[in-house]
Length: 385
Image 1 (tube, rainbow, N blue to C red):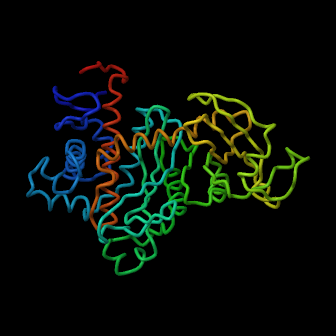
Image 2: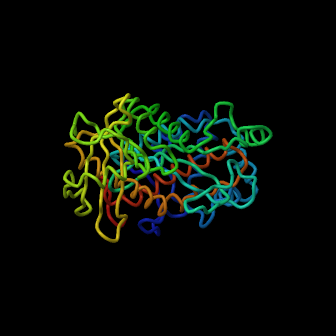
Image 3: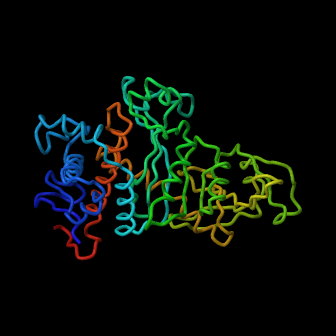
């Protein structure tokens, strides 16, 4: 199946101005939109995201297909039209599953700097090292493999002031939206993933620094989801003394645990070169007895020197788990190379539904750009076409 129509003058990796979804793909992605006019506007909006240079404003996108006079129509379609973005995200996930054979879900945060104070969700965001940035904080759930990654689901963090009138009413925040922390966003993303039919349920790789990693790992374990969760060195756990009976039964930081058991270290190659790794059996508390593995990794000079993860993988699957820890790097690469180019950060409106509709269609545009970049690898394709 051809995924795209493309002008003769386009170059690989750069969608042309008249790039469009194949009608079959469009029907799959936008079949949940009840009216043909909505489906047409969705396709045109995605075309505008792919074709427009620079920042993707509603005015600029409207000018791509109907002229600047269509701005009000585009604004209504994104910010006020009642179409539900979740079925589109589910269809997107199924198309990513079918076309790109992902290995796992990756959950990562993004910061969207903004000027002013009117965009939905905007707040003073505290960054590492104490720096403060004015902007939005969101969490994305991506389907990823070692080759590519595509965003499917998004959560926008809303502080208490956005969950209280008058800002809540002004931004049309629905009554069931209550993602007040980044950890709430992660849990909501996991819940959304589990609602999508026809795609893999796990493993889930969580690479989010602003959460209680042990609590997130326990939550995923309770759901029966295979996981790898990045954990900070100050988190506290206990050694699993059923596996290591001769060691201390007191609580340790995971940084101490990773450094204190050198005899368990071994050399492995997760696919990107040799690394030193350790897998330490731990429990979240002596009373609960929730068993996990703490993965520590020391990489060669020039890379982050030590990384720590919690997983419910079995010890023989440590190498597989370490390979999964490379997927957030693929997400970061493709976010920079593709998502930012198709306008994931660019919605400037006040509407909470508008933000979700825009970022959903930007995720569709990301998939199309990914398929176009990989076109020579697709069955039946011809390089240089």
